[in-house]
Amino acid sequence: MKLDYVSIEKRDGIAIVCFDRKANLNAFNEKLVIELTHAARSFFDDLETHAVILTGASNGFSAGFDLKAVDSWPSETDDLKRRQRAYGGVRLCKAWEAMPQITIAAMEKLAVGAGVAIALACDWRVLARDAYLYVPEVRIGLNLQWGALPRLITLVGPARAKRITILCEKMPAAQALDWGLVDELADAGGTVDMASEMA
Image (cartoon, rainbow, N blue to C red; front, side):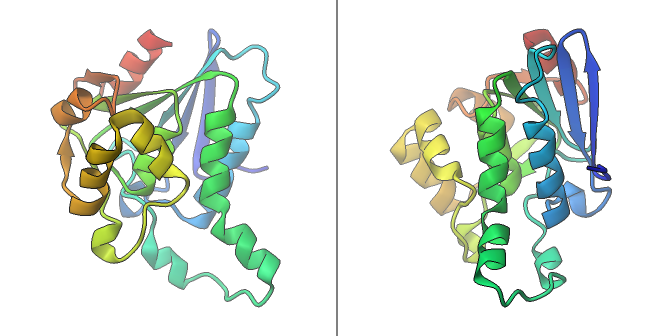
């Protein structure tokens, strides 16, 4: 499969998977979901790679799902095709969660909505000190999808998960570390280096 938004660099048993749409603060569209799912599955039988670092664009890990991109999708009349498309994000996160290697999300600037969901599917998370996490789905009339809610509850407990999802507050890096949403903080621009040290 030709990857337009995703690059994979391997060195010394560690793979760095970088996704960059070069648009809309690296928000997800259907093509990016498919490419990142393919990238994750490519490691399932990889016996040379021991850890995989997932990182986004330097101007932001991801601003979530690109809601404007949905308007450009062709309307599907086939139920199976609609279902296939609707569960793309779930398959993406399950692929990253099921990967046999240790997975580490390295997040710069911001991780919003779907960006938080994919990070929660990784084993560990590194966040830049000047970055924030934000789950705005309820504010815009959606629910937290991609199987992220059970993962969030596992990490922070039910009460904090309710606060994160219902109040839609931007969470600074220090609070994310304190609440257990991330495992390490790094200086701006240093999340991949920190994740590499962990790996």
